Amino acid sequence: MSLKHEVEKRRTFGIISHPDAGKTTLTEKLLLFGGAIQMAGAVKARKATRHATSDWMKIEQERGISVASSVMKFNYRDFEINLLDTPGHQDFSEDTYRVLTAVDSAMMVIDSGNGVEPQTEKLMEVCRMRNTPIVTFINKLDREGLEPLDILTEIEEKLQIECAPLSWPIGMGKAFKGVYSLYKKELQLFKAGADSNHFETVKITDLNDSKLDELLGTQAAELREEIELLEGAANPFDLDHFLKGNQTPVFFGSAINNFGVKELLDAFVELAPAPGPRKAEERTVAPDEKGFSAFAFKIQANMDPAHRDRIAFFRICSGKFTKGMSVRHHRLGKDVKLANATVFMAQDRAHIDEAYAGDIIGIHNHGTIRIGDTFTTKEALKFTGVPNFAPEMFRRIRLKDPMKRKQLHKGLIQLSEEGAVQVFRTLLGGDYILGAVGVLQFDVTVERLKTEYKVEADYTATDFQTARWIESDDEKKLAEFKRLFEHSLAEDADGYLTYMAPSVWKLNYTIEQWPDILFHKTREQV
Image (cartoon, rainbow, N blue to C red; front, side):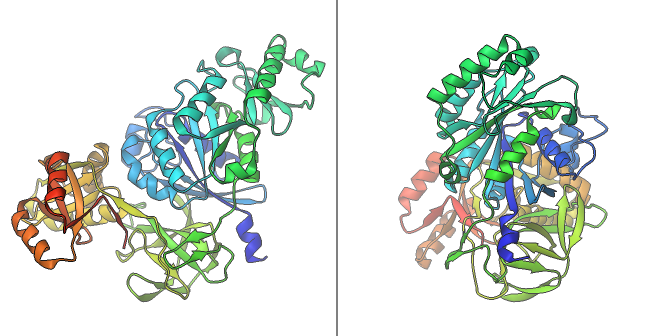
């Protein structure tokens, strides 16, 4: 089979939403349709005996949230699907950002009761930076919620993206009767308690068909009226607009009841783009080029605590991976052999012999691979856009047993390589400072140090409120800055000099006073 054909049948996407919009449930139902799991188990309570397949970390299971991004592969119809389940919790925007650099499209889940929530707005900003095409699923129609037209207006106003409904709900809550597919011209009837194989689907190409009245009673007239209103007011679906990230096709359903999910998946594989060209610093790389190229966008330690393993997740950008192939690790300037590649079904994994552009593969990492590293079979390439963000919160880590300092160092370095937390070491005193974009990451770090590295630690407040990476072409000025600000300087896990300020005002004042020093808010992975 040709390389071009292999690339065209792949779909690589991330699911984004606010916490509790039903993202994990939708992920499970998509996996169910792909035959990847036999039984869906929603995260309902702390002590739930069964946890969602995509939530494998202990702290996730206890709190019922997705903390780390999971990568899952499954087949559906003739398509090979790579699904990246991003963390829904607002504290995990940095890992989420990196995951969104590895996808070709996104699926946005919105709770019909809450509409557009702050986290969704943040994630949309990330998608907009890359013009990522987005398909929208409005969930929980089996509960009372906002009027569908009001939700569409809110999406357009808050997220600055045009909506094109491809299905339309009939009632909601107790009066929810089903959805009418404007995409396939058919009616799917909802029955509480039924499974996905027992929802009745009726072909109705003409809404004036009397069969509609028989099936829906008084709600038939409402549906006709709403669709007539839609045809006058809503934008018709335009594939080109969608692929440029300007328009989102909208579907309605109830993930927990498995209703509307198959229709969403069917439309998604037909409309969403196959892997496309990727920008590198040197040139644009086409997916069907013969030469293999990939970049590491995520590193996860201890997916299997028994083996203390670390997996680097690669997004293949061009060519074909074959087991045992030799590739160039450009940051180190070394050739490495990719002996075993893994694909994931959440925590279940399978070794594979080949993979193509668009696929996400896991490679065992012995501490040499970092986020943003590029691997190719020949020329030197550096794929752009996998940055570190300056943290917004800081805590000083406190070790309970001084004899465990070595284990603490190892644990913190590995966790920082994952991008879950940033680690800084002060120039004065050598204290460890954790930097994060949200408070929960500190709890996760302490929990993981304890369970994965057997290190008992806690954290205390610091005087730092903001940080910037610094550099200067004027070595004299940099030396003077280091001498005067030694108490506010630290090195990050990669050895980059970082200035930590007690307030934003102090940071801005220092930037003003030192024009020869460059202060960076983001740092490209090197």
